[in-house]
Length: 221
Ligand code: DC
Image 1 (cartoon, rainbow, N blue to C red):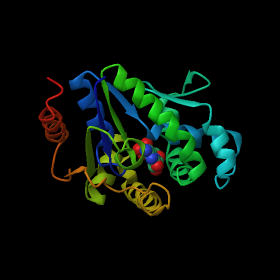
Image 2: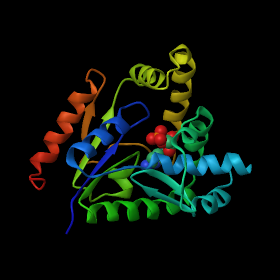
Image 3: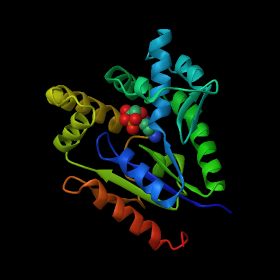
């Protein structure tokens, strides 16, 4: 037994993190941000000078990383969120995430964290391949999309670097391409996902829609 698991996937700037956080809060369940794991591997790789093309070395670095509702931990120590959110780490995380060896290690980490969340009442798990690969049996799958310009605008506003809009848009384009064209677990909606285009919607509207879908499952009540 246990609570429901909701998978939320989508590209950078689609609103995943904000939506997942708000939905988890409303439902009183865990919020698991799986991107933090790929970012943590990237951070360790940059710090230790690992070759971003060496999947085996990166997988070894991934082996000590754990995921909790508070974020990613390495050797039991929380990694500060701001260290994971730099443009350098974002770009490296996308490269790191293309290696099957890394994805394999992190697959177990994600499933363990999700199973724990389910036992404690449920969870919202956000990423790129949660509905397709990590949790194909998730109770509800949401795929968020939004026009590329709008996603870049949100990222620029969110990070307080509005003057860097052009650079952010270009970096996002590269990341989108890498994330959706890679051979292993490319970014795409699961066949049974509800696809929500958030271009014209604000956060509250998207959150309401997801909560509505969750309530339709009726198990929450
Ligand atoms: O969601 P994010 O921007 O924090 O993710 C960082 C990178 O990690 C992103 O470029 C793709 C990768 N990622 C992934 O491949 N699979 C996931 N489940 C989550 C993130």
